Length: 468
Picture 1: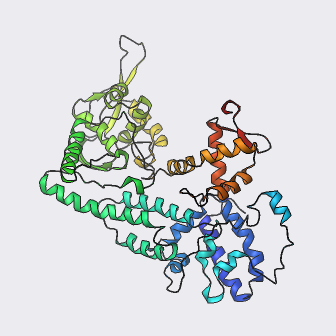
Picture 2: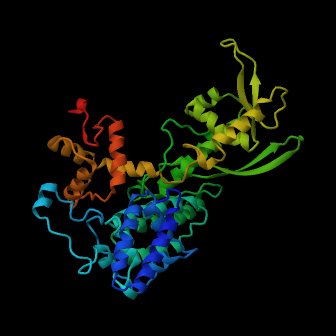
C-alpha cells in the first residue's frame, strides 16, 4: 500500500498475478485470498478507472489490456449493478440482520468477480477489472472524457482512423448503446472537416478552421469569462467564418469556445543585438488577442489591457508572463503619475529601447515559476480541452435533490448509507447513479462548503441548519 506506487504498475502486477495463480491453482482458491485486498486498494485510488481506460485504448504501446480488448472470443460485459465491496450490505442494516446467513466456505463457491471473469483460457481480465467498481458506466464516461480531450488536442489533420478502430472494439465489449455519445463525437470531427472545406470554397482568404460540436453529447468543456473581448482583427475573422456557417447551416449558428482554440502567429521580434528575427508561436486565441493589441500601441499597462479585454488585472499580469518568457514582450518602469507617487510598470515589445527596463529580467524569472508555459494557464490556455472537475460536478449536481430529500426524511446519515440509498433509489430512472464512495464523499464536501449540508465530527451528514 505504498502511496507513491504508480497505479498502472499496480494494475499490471494485478493482471500478471491473476494469470500466474490460475496456472498454479486452477481451482482459484488461492486467487480468491490474494485478489480481494488488491481490488479494494485499487477501488480506493482516484485514478484507477482512468489508468485502466488509458491502457485499454493505447494501441501504440499495446499491453495486456489492449490485447484483452482485441480478443476474438471475448463476450460483452454484463451490466453489473452491485459494487464488489458491498454486495450483501446494499440493503439497510435491519433488513440485512433479518436475512443474515453464515458465509459460505471458500471450497464451495467463488466470489462473484471470479465468476464474471471466467476461468482458465476463457478468463476475462477486463470483466474482472470492471467488476472492481461494479458498473461499466464509470469506464464509458472516463473513455468519453479521454476521447474528447484527444480529439480536441489534435485539430489539424482531422484523422480519426485509430479512434474509430478503438471505438468499434469497445462497442463489442461495452455495448453499442453505451458508446453512442462517443460515436457522435467522432462524427462531429468528420463533419467539421467537410464543413470547413465548403466554407473555404466561399471564403478563399479565410485562415479559420473550426470543429463544430454537438454539445449535448460532449462532456463539459473549458469556457472563457463572459466579459472577454477579443482584438477586433481576430474577432472579425471569427465573425466572418460564423456568418458563412450560418448561411450554409441556417438556422444554426456558432458559439465559440475560445480557450480550446489554437492560433498560429508569425511575429517579427527585435532581439538583444538589434536584429529582427521571425518567431513562429502557437497560442490560445485570448493570448493572441493580448499580443495583437501591441500592433495598435507600442506600450500598454495591465490596467489598460484589462479595460480593453474585459479581464481582471491579475489575469492579464499572469498571462503576459507567457509573452515575457518567449521574449516577445518586456516590462519597463514608468515614472509616478499625478494620481500616485508610486512607480508603475508597463509592457512594451522586446525591441523597445529604454534605459529603465531592468524589471524585465527579474519579472521573467519570477513569472517562469508561476506560468512556465501556455498549457498551465487558467482560461487562456488550458490544462486540456475537457474540464474534468466541472464535468464531475455537473454530473453530481443531478443527485443533489435526492440527497437533500433523503436527509430531510431520514435525518443524519453516514456516507455509506447515502451511497447505498442512491444506488437503490436512482437505479432505473433516467439518471443512473454509478459513482464511487470516494467521488460521493468529495461531492458531499462540496455541498458542505456551499452550506447546503454539514458534517459532524462523527462523519454524519445532515442538512445545514439554515437550510432546514
